[in-house]
Image (cartoon, rainbow, N blue to C red; front, side, top):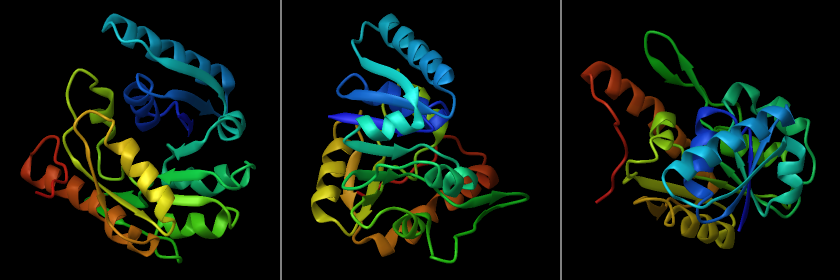
Length: 216
């Protein structure tokens, strides 16, 4: 499976590339192709040290969209709209959003757009044929990067496209010890995205590390 990560040089994007590239072909995208290539090289070296083979390349964000079957948006919310508007070629592709609209201050707050969630905002911004799936929202960026440790969280997956949802759920289940769960249609993205600021606040006020979501 070819997976393109738009904004793949950030913490989440790089961590996902490390985790996914041992099983799938991963294309790291960036506004600066040289930066994407550098991160790709760094990831390969880290995996080589662990004796793990991988399939990784670094390209522009546009090339990542063009070459991929599944496009992951490894973007902070504040850059989501401008980045999406600068790209083309999403027609018919599965687009995975782990994006959480949040603000950081004394407390972490959920600040959804008028559409109600980042997932529904993408529905407005992307071509009608784009297959939007909300997933991976509640995993801390630094946990993706800790590749010698297992990820054992539950991953809620929302989409209006049942086939795309099942494809992403199957992808989730190939990563470490993650477990995918069907969280319903795209309108439920608000419930999934808003869990992340709750997790961060619980972590802060209780001095806890690696707080995650588990449904058991």
